[in-house]
Length: 237
Image (cartoon, rainbow, N blue to C red; front, side, top):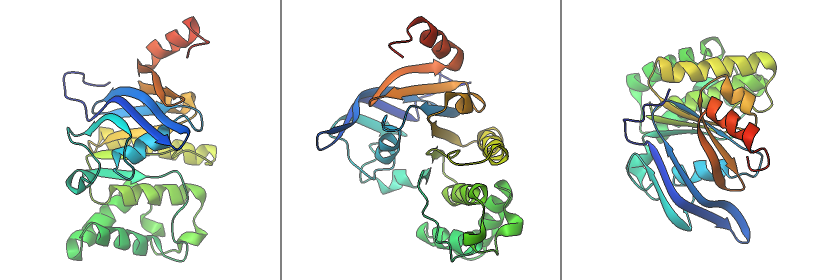
């Protein structure tokens, strides 16, 4: 459960982002605290836009967004506390898993024995130790997803953003990733934001949910309360 006595890790107030005439986010208001929070909405609802704003990849048009109490745009210090796993495929398939993590470690100014130890640690965390010397072109979809998460974890961020991590996975791989996400918070203390367009998947990982539709947060809170709202106001939520 979310501890509401603690300050919000992410706080958005009347947050807006437009792409020309297309609305990405429209007066979005939300507060996300420590734990696992599911960001649920259909494709195009604004989930990926929200994650890009959190990482400072893009800049909002209006409103305010605070991550760890700071504005993320141009904030390198803040970015060092965030791990981001995007929803698109980007792994260099001719590299081995170990080579990829070493490349990622270099981006975070990690080197030497400290990097060796951290690669071994995150490889164990995502259950990829035996496959690190294989080229990623031979990985399954689930293995690629686990390695992407390992890369996002490498610098030990406080906040982990997982954009559609279950997309395209078979049932066994989906369960493996769900179990991994649970461990990332329960055993390692990471605050995790995980997006999906399937409410049932999110319900297996957390009770804390934000529903986004057409760039707005239409409901947030405990999953049972939101299900009650859906039943009472089916045309609104």
